[in-house]
Image 1 (cartoon, rainbow, N blue to C red):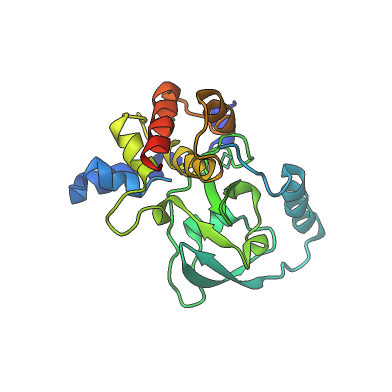
Image 2 (cartoon, rainbow, N blue to C red; image 1 turned 120 degrees about the vertical axis):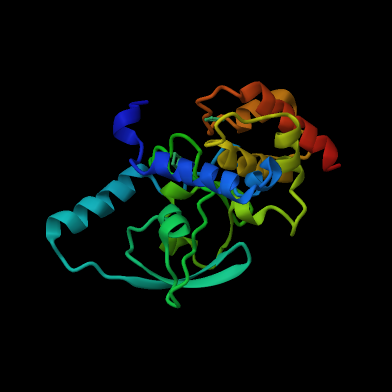
Length: 226
Ligand code: FES
Ligand code: FES
């Protein structure tokens, strides 16, 4: 992967922001994980489609039409104006609804922005999806769940608990994607084999190489959820 050319330039700042918030507020690692989001991922829109949408508006010079959509995210409905080419990931991280409220769900990370790493994984109607590859307008009428929506009030999801117990992260940048993807796997297959876990998580990449701990965590979460 060509790191310097494919990564968004604001990612280090995002990471610093996350870490700063942990230090500043004294949040425990457990609480920090509630803000981190994580199978095999169903890419909803082909990369070429998004690229074509971008190049079309750029080359025609036509006025860009905006659409108003209602998105149900973590059981809260947001009405938001978007360009047809706007991805769901952009809305989650940077979107502002028509009432002026920032959506500000930054658990899903923008890493490759092209469906190659899984850092932006969310659930759409219970299935894991790369949010960088789904247009926001295509998410209307569906239930969107980000890592921020996995915990039940103050109780972490068993997958989040297991990631903590098995120390399944180092820098944590990939962790939201892995946690969400793992939840989707266990919802569909409560008793996965180690080989199935590895295969289903092959759409997520961890640069720190914590894979053995991640696979252990998912197997452990499966036992907890029985
Ligand atoms: S940011 Fe890498 S798959 Fe979406
Ligand atoms: S823990 Fe650092 S990229 Fe996975």
